[in-house]
Amino acid sequence: MSIGLTNFKFYRSFRVKTDEKDKVFIKITVLDGENRGQIIHENVSIIDFNLFSMSFKTDIEIKIDTHLKLELYTKKIFNKWDFEVNARVIRSFSESKDSKLYNYGVELLNQNNDSELKYFITDYVAGFSGSKLKKFLIKSALSAREISISDGIELFSLLNVLYKEFNESSIIEIIDESKHLLNCEEVRLWKINVDNDKLENIYSSTGSTTLKEKNFSMQEVGMSFTTSQCINKVLKDGRKRKQDEVVEKSILCLPILNKEQKCVGVYQFINKSESRFSLQDEVTASFLSMVMSKFFLSFSPKSKSTRIAHLNPELEDDFIYFGSGQKSAAIRSTLRKLKYGRNNIHIVGEVGLGKAFFAKELANTSKTEIYNCKDKEKLKELFETSTPLAKSVSIVLKNINYLTEKEQNELFNWSQFHECQIISTTTEDLNYKVETAKFNKLLYKKLSHSLFHITPLRNRSEDILPIAKYFIKMECKKRNLSNIELSPESLSYLTTYSWPGNITQLEKSIIKAFMVRADQESKIHLIEASSDLAQSPKEIESVIADHCDYSIHPYKLFELLEQLNSKKEAS
Image (cartoon, rainbow, N blue to C red; front, side, top):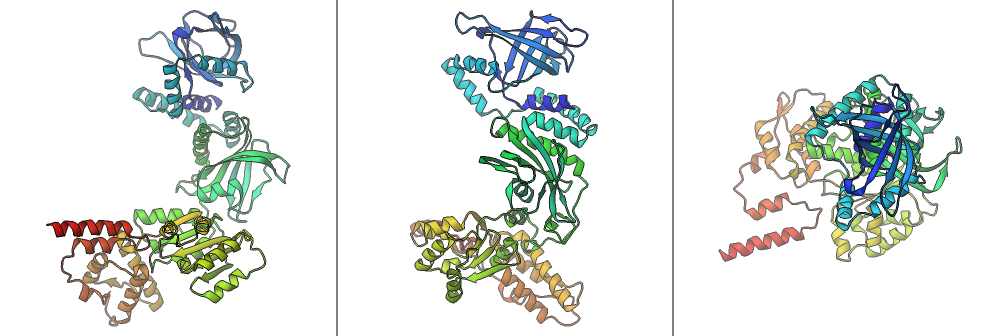
């Protein structure tokens, strides 16, 4: 089991290449197997190395998993080095079909930041010339490997080996190997329990599995689960776990996905030996979480009553309101991530896009107070709230663009003493207002930790028909009807009309069509279609105006229209 994963880590790692001119030599002693005691010192040369791995080539055959003693020495007048490291062979291949040379990759054992090898590497790199050092720095910065044809063949063979090993390995074996690969103190595997609505620690490298994560929006495990993202965090002052008093200093979490790519658990790595997990660790951990996911491909939460109901692909999507296009799918994905966090959210969009609806959904709590900033009395009640509102509380501020300068300052001062989540909505471009000193910059920064912009309906025409069908379905359900469709004229009208009132206007049009429909008629006809279908060709200015987003300040649009007018006058 360990060879395959260690080999993968070796393949992905960045190593310092050697040059014959550097006069770095190696003497190898075989420590076990049938060739125990064999010494290799001729026709052997180092290819590259780092603190934990090395590759070299020789004409002598050495079996995988053989333990070696490597003696590294230099032949320089100054800065002579002569030291030993123990190693294990983890990979080997010949350079070509006819070559008698073999390339070997070895894992260097028991190395850390205090090892003699570290000081040798430091001294070795310090001796680079200016041009060589520049190349080295560029390569280390771009250390994510480019896959050449030979690399691709090697990687394919490696993945085949890994696949075979994983199929023959248990979860606990992979966890133990993961701990070794990432050089951390502890590894834990979490899985959602749909019966009690908690993330539970089902496996651990320490053998203890008593931990539970009740609040999905708290700490790193919950954050990774609800966002399906990698979470890499350093805890500067440390954090003591209540259950066993372990002090957590660094945390790396990766989501575990089922076959529908829904998050059903989390793979957690705790306390990296070198204080924090690196980007390379994230790459390795991502691969390991993918490997671990194979054990949970068929696991699909089915409980509608739990807070993870959104993971169940069979449940009706609450956000069908957005339609079925690619943009809508992206919006739904964003909503799911925002819903289970506690950041302040600022929602921007034109009239009729359901901003208040989404604000309430994103609040993720039944006790959400909604304040309309047009209602000054209600706003006054908020400012007079004396008891500090906790993190678990959410408030919605509709039409925040209607706040006066005084109210903006009051709201900012009020927010300094409350930890609650604030979800605000607006139909105007507040960023532009901030730039023109018409809105409090500090307040805007506080409210827009997460910014969610809703695209106008006319700019996602592929969603119009699915949304219309959804409203028709709802109306049929209310009126106990079936098989009601739009007339051909109305279908054409749906995609040619600009819908300035967006989804609200579309819904009202469909309700009106049902109201005037004859009892036995199987089709509904949108009233507006008769008058608006026959339209004369539009000027370019009108076309641009029809497709602009009025929740974003149109100063760039104005510039474009001015240019068009100037060209017309000139011609």
